[in-house]
Image (cartoon, rainbow, N blue to C red):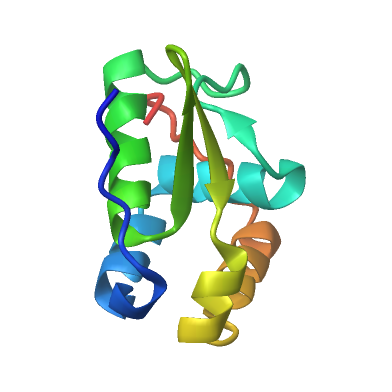
Length: 112
């Protein structure tokens, strides 16, 4: 299996990170990883088409927010807390705290 592109910690870009976090479903995925640790690629609590979900995971990975581990056909994602904190101190914690206080659910009335 080919490896997936995942940027080095020193290559993380704040604009890419904030762009990835600016989408409600991706923000919910990040909140889920922050709460649970390593998570499977198909969350049962989100009603999102598989192809759309795959795209969200790709954006998060390529922005440097997640590590992806492949195990057979399954993929497992982990939040790159330490790398993000080292590169952009306090940003992830601030975004997560704001999302929690605003009641962001990760989906709107259209299921996105």
